[in-house]
Amino acid sequence: MMRRAAGLIASVVLLVAAPAGAAGAETRVTNDSTAGSYTRYDGQSDATMTACSTGRRSQNEPTVAVDPTNAMIMTAGSNDYCAEIENGSGNVWAGYYRSTDGGQTWSNSLVPGYPEDGSTAGSASPAHGSCAAAGDPTQSFDGAGHLYYGFICFNRVKPTNGSIYLARYDDHGEDYVRTVRVERGTPSVWGLFQDKINIAVDQGSGTPTAGNVYVAWARYSGQAANNNIFFTRSTDGGRTFSKPTRITGGQAEEQFADIAIGPDGAVYVTYREIAHQKSTENRIRIVSSTDGGQSFSAPRTVAPIVPFESTDFGPDTCGDGPFACDSGLTYARFSSLSAVAADATGVHVVWNARNDAGQAKVFARNSPDGLTWTDPAVTLDAATTGHQFFPDIASNGSTLSVVFQDSRGDGAYSPDLPPGVTAAGTNSGNVVNTFVATSTDGTAWAEAPVTANGTNPNWEVRSGMRSPFFGDYNYVSSTGSRVAAVWTDTRDLVPGTDPRETGGDDDGDGFDGAQTCTWDPNDIDAPSYITPTIADACLSVGGLDQNIYVAASP
Image 1 (cartoon, rainbow, N blue to C red):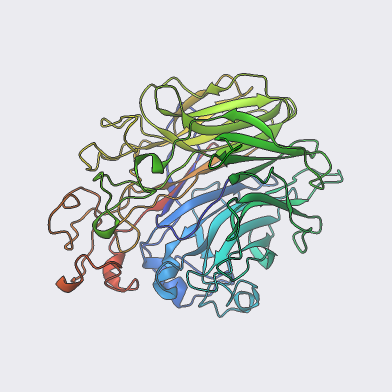
Image 2: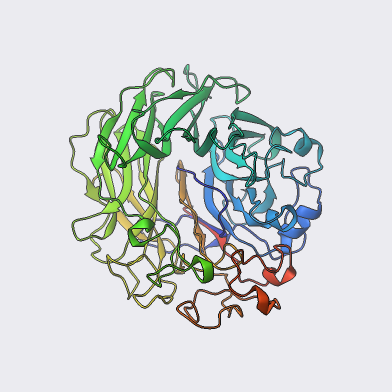
């Protein structure tokens, strides 16, 4: 599903998805509190792997893929902030995790090419030395057990070099093969930044499109008011890619592309259009291709929406100190986005947006061909409280599965508040839960939590523990009888008191994480809030410890 901006802080919990109606036994994917738990692709260690093993830092924007040739094998990814301990503040890298026992245990690593990667493959990666921060993970297996892992890579200082890359792993995700640059970002401040990548691979066999690798993303141009969705494909196992082409209208701000492939090889790309100038609207759009991604239909509207955005409440993120907002609220970034699945019954799109009461709900709509959208949109449930966000959808050919997060357990819920914070600006507790809904026709849905553990997205885990970040999406993968859902979770984060807070609205709001640092009083209210250095061990005691978990059907 959709994958977005890097530079965020959170950890990722991967749950192998339990059937609707039952809570699963969560498995933690990112084992970042045990020495030796992270190793390089070659089984060796280095300073970055050592730091990652016990860093207890954040992971977010999780992705998951179940191997269609062996459903006991699954892989996951995230923006893994353990890398910044060695690479410097904000220099997150793409985490790579793999399970061979249905998600019960996981090996942890990073995609080769991170700044301090001295391995043979790491040094050979085109990302190595070109960019310092990598994230926005997206993954897909082909029908022969080859795994493709897409990510963006950029610099936080000039030249930004915001490019997109694709790594390939063979032998069911065990053996790293190579990384290629799919599209280059230009270094100028007025240049191009390639962002929010999504990939899908045709898992069919014996058809002309089998094994095709498809990539869609948002291209940002410093000289244009609009960002648009671009697309490319590979027909040689990810070695080379076609010339990127714009597949959308081009007059709007377009984001959050998601790709699905039908059983006949048809390709569908859904995305969000954002109203920001004349002739643009807030709506969910889709394009389709019947020739293996060589050409696409004109964009069609799936549904107009009333967006549910963190910017409804002020800036897109609000925290403490220099990151505090006039409202006094603390909340992480979130947005309305869409996802698509395709099977023999048609094309199915889900998205989150506000209903007439102002509540954020997950909606679904179905089409026989991805072009005609006459069936009405439906919600996945009838809950009248709580905001729903970050949906993703997958089909195993007969059953649709949608993962999303929901704050219906929030006693402070109001349409006028973000999830997880009270009107007084304090922590409303672990009131956000992860749900999976299932359907055989895209119209009638059954949904239930897949974990008994709640979370809260608003812990101050970014920029020296002064502002929150929860990632931009969840992920779900489905093959045969196995469904795997993954999301960001804060259950392992250790609360604490930030000694920089000496009064005002941010003091005692309940969103501070534990730390054992000694702060220089002269640094209180300093703009950067990066004291101590990001590598200081005082930041590894659990105050930043968000993780990924998995809940999977048997």
